[in-house]
Length: 339
Image 1 (cartoon, rainbow, N blue to C red):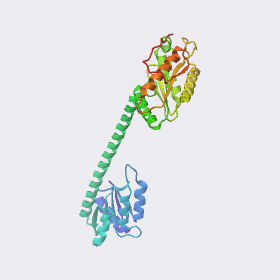
Image 2 (cartoon, rainbow, N blue to C red):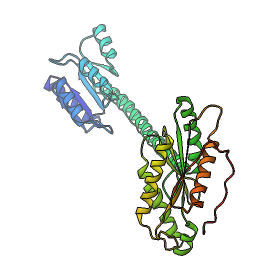
Image 3 (cartoon, rainbow, N blue to C red):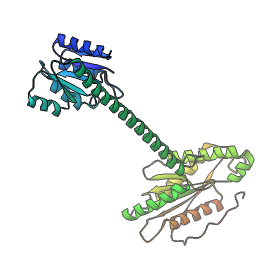
């Protein structure tokens, strides 16, 4: 471990260096002034190490005193743990109090005896070794804590993200729609919902195989997600080949426009589907809009969008249907996917 001796008198520096080397401390550095010592320490210090493990400094020196050197070492977060031993031939009690107030670890009277010097340096190095071990342990704990946080964040992300398509899953959507419903109720703003179904998807899977079907789902989800990126827009995989798009602060006209943009964009993808009358993959969309209040629930919006999606499929698919919110909500009616 390295020892830095700071003294403006060359013979004192060399004498102390000789005594320490004789006591088994081979790495002894010398500084002729307080500023030279600080320059040496700060230029070589990093978050993982410093160029000296203990500093022996004379108290009275031209320029920066040993007390000021100690104060600046203790004020530097990278150097703070270095024990500072002050040396002086004066027995001024007030001077010693200033040194300890500045953060000095110990005091060595001059002239310095070899046994006392060795004992004080050994004690300081033991303290530094203990502090280094503690800091290393703290860094290990911080790294472990950070790793656990990243793993926990990833687990939370996986819990709400559909692995195949990369968009949020039904669980996330169920939480989000209730949250946005409450927000819209407080703000008095409209909330729109689009339910999307990939047309004739069972026939697509049967003809091209499930790997191609998975790829189709991912491409549709990616395109829908890229086209609905306003703050307040959210896309989720709602079911097997169904997706939901929540549009905050969006009225019925705006929802219909977004739905048509999505319908056209999926058709323009040009994903081959020989079993479709359009010869490419298309989607049907049901749009519904409501202005929530505290007495209502999002199930009304979901039911209306579901009815509209049924109407779009019954009318021939590859189209948008807008819900009439005055109609009562009913359970979903299934449409033969091969029709």
